[in-house]
Image (cartoon, rainbow, N blue to C red; front, side, top):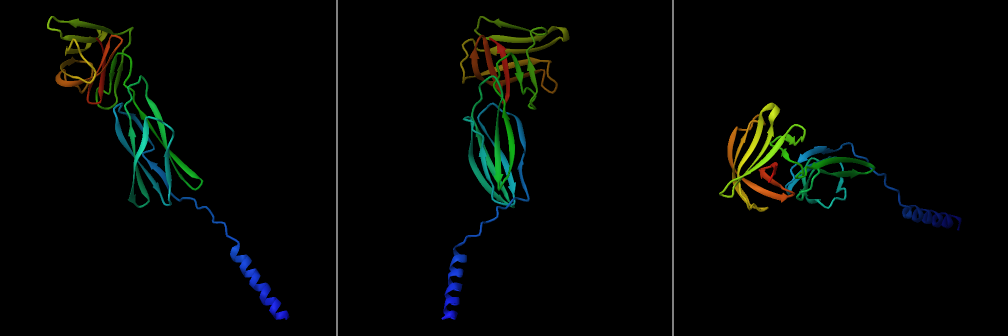
Length: 225
C-alpha cells in the first residue's frame, strides 16, 4: 500500500512538473546595426531610399509616424541582412523634413535618420552642382531683375555686383505653367564646375508670389518672374 502511494505521488509530481512552463530567456543580438545610419539632402522629388538592417537574430523595423514616408518593401538578402525600401513623397514645402527608421531585436534597438530637402521658398539655387551646394539670395549683397521681350519671352537675373557674378536665365515663357517644360539658356559665372553657357529643357515646378521654380534634374532655381 505504501509503495502504491509512493508511485501515485511520483506520478502527480511528474504531471505537475510537466505543466509548469519554463520561461524562455529573451535573447539579445550580438550584432544589430543599420546601414547607412543617416541620409541627408535627399531629393525633394518622389523617390525611394534603401536602408539595410544587419542582425544575427530576427529583427523588426518600423518608421516613425510620417505621412510622407512609408515602408514599401522588405527583402532578406542573407547573412542576417534585410534591405528595407522606403518611399518618399514630393516635398514642395519650404523646409527639409526628417524621419527615422528604428530596428528592434530583444531589448536592443538602433535608428537610422533620413532628411528630405524641401523645394524651398527664397530666391536662389539648390543642388546646382549635383552635390547639395546652394545659393541663398542675400538682399544686402545681391540684386535681381526681370526683362520681358515683345515675343513674350522673359529673362530673369540674379547679380552679385561687388564680385561681378551673375546667373541669367533666358527664354522663360511668358505664360509658364507648373508641370510644363521650357528650353532655356543659362549664362553664369557663379558656380565652379558648371558651364558658362548651357541650353537645357527644364521643368517648371511652381509659380507663386512673383517667383518661378524651375528644375534641371535635382537642381532647383527660384527666380524672380
